[in-house]
Length: 308
Ligand SMILES: [Zn+2]
Image 1 (cartoon, rainbow, N blue to C red):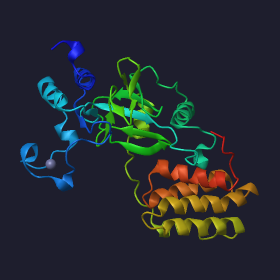
Image 2 (cartoon, rainbow, N blue to C red):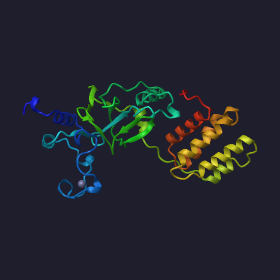
Image 3 (tube, helix red, strand yellow):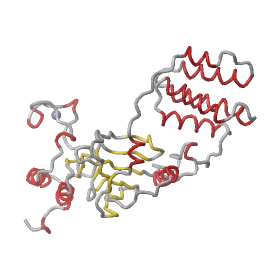
């Protein structure tokens, strides 16, 4: 066939596969995978030996791709995990009510937050890489994953409107059209190697050994001052928080203690240190813990929202 007769979406699928990124079909005009979800699996055809997820059926095979995309104008999904990619998904707010939480006050969108993350890390924004503009004006920055590293997709763990797509996720490829709007390549460079600092932020930290409540209590047993008693009370609330309420418990403890920090006792460093230990001892990941503390302190007036 001549290139001009090749449907645009077939070209998009082949182009992604030629870069070594396995593709699968998304519903025409949509970003959801084509085909049946696992709960409706007929256990026939490609699923005869068990349901195959989009990640499992994604392919680099040009013949299979041609057959599939000549059948219907499917959008193109890239299975980021098998493609050895991590794609940083910088989103923009859905509407006027979708505003940044206190931690990211003043930020307009995921692009702002990502720039701030780079600044905090003391690194230049890694923009010299394959980049796609999403249909709503966000950006997908593509990176290759260093050898030996396996990353899962994340949702907002880096920051507001900053998701990542890796194993367990996928991205809508350039050339796809969702709701009438295209995904377009805006920087056609080879994908860069994921910067080490970003890889570190995306690598799950091993859970710290739980600190028994008795030990923390012992450390504060001789508390006499009003501020230490308040700190101890808040720590005990955090330590008794149940799964699902842990993040909130740390946030409210920071919020409650912010007023005392403003009066100079205890110090912000002491509160942050104790709440980090308490939060992590109940299984809250360090990043989430830090975010919750910071948000609570900002909301309570102990920190400037703009401070890095
Ligand atoms: Zn199935």
